[in-house]
Amino acid sequence: MPRQRPTARDADAISRRLRHFVQQRYGSWAAFEKRFSVPRTTRLAWSRREQPSVPDVPQLLRLARETGLNLNWLLLGEPPELRITPQANPVEQVYAVIEAELRASEHVRAADFDFAWTQIKAHSDTANAHKDTVVGLAVDGVRSVFQKMVQWSKQQDAFAKLWQDPKNQP
Image 1: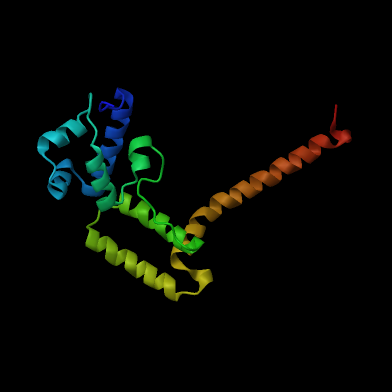
Image 2: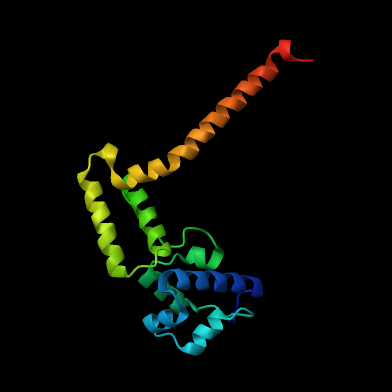
């Protein structure tokens, strides 16, 4: 079977996601080129706005292995952006998801990130389970939206009961 290229639409989407990843993780194409020793002409082909080319399989494998890039996200747009190693328990799964999101979104040196994340994890591991730093912060961040949804649900339930009462029917 002859080698096939993705459709123009797919190539545009892949190129857009790759540009996003490079900007988030490396800050610029120049830094990415330097880190991966990608020839400038190759990088220009990947990053052009019209009719971009996409990385070949060996390049995709290298990106996935060395950066944790999720190829399902890059090629298909399916989240998350970074691969998450399956964890044995739900708390470790939460840690893995938050770490992957932070690594993808924070513009800090790898050493600084590793130090900060290690400190957070160390504090979390010594805290009792109900005051766990990472999980506690995640729950606190969701709590206000959760409470609003519970209130909305109660209002909807009260409205439905009111509507079902024959005394309230016209």
